[in-house]
Image 1 (tube, rainbow, N blue to C red):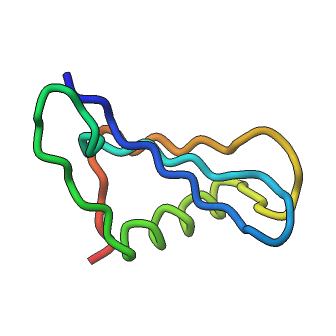
Image 2 (image 1 turned 90 degrees about the vertical axis):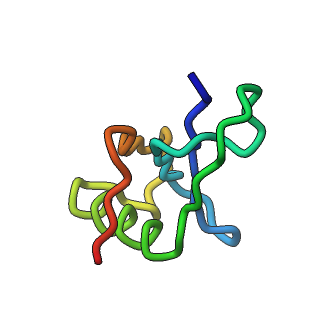
Length: 77
């Protein structure tokens, strides 16, 4: 099975909690030669919105906040 892609957006200028999103997209460096899927800006924006609704506070220091979308990376459109 190809390794799934984890994306971790964070703010560069101030420390805080990192959001880690697991998708169903193969990682571009996978060894099984599965075609990597693209993660578009609207996917990232939707994941950030969902995480904020679930309690992610990017300004609060702490452990990474996981969002598992490996069952299907949903698009808001």
